[in-house]
Length: 117
Length: 108
Image 1 (tube, chains in turn orange, green):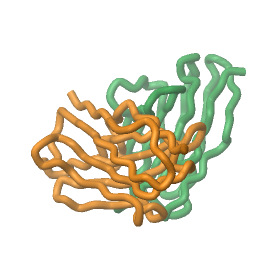
Image 2: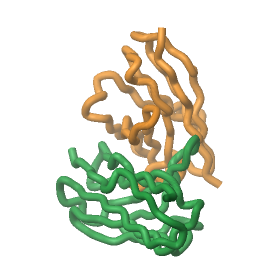
Image 3: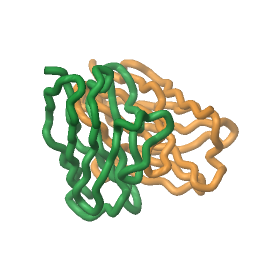
Image 4: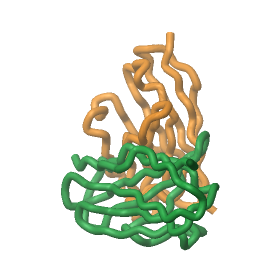
């Protein structure tokens, strides 16, 4: 059974760095073809691709946010970490981690992160 | 970056109606198209991938069609539990993936 769960702070201040962790089970990121992606959704708005980490270590980022994003994995755990630097109130959103086969077949429940002073 | 455009933004329908949602890609994406359903307060759920393949446990009243740049999601007979926002997503070649702006299906 595939599951993913996001964790991190619910509230961060502008200019700070956000670190989110995705803990997953039911698959391995060492398995060829496996990938984990982060998606976000501002309140009432559409879904937005942020970053993807592949089984072979390749990484992909949003064109508009790539200077502020870093995706990585904890090799000792089934976890993928996303950092977002220099936060702004427009970064307020629910952040989802998902298993990515091109289509996104399993989603975490999401974590709402509010950026406010 | 491929832009995905969904129409209409909102659809007001009655139970039992046949419902058609459209999604257009700014460039050819072949058959690399998925549809998701999202209800309030929930994560999106994969409905259909590769244009027309239903995901696990998705009822057969949901179907998808199209190729290239024009795609359609059809609900053959709307049930009240189908009221939600529907998103299309392209996954052609390499990321970044892109989503449409969503179509909200609501009861009249």
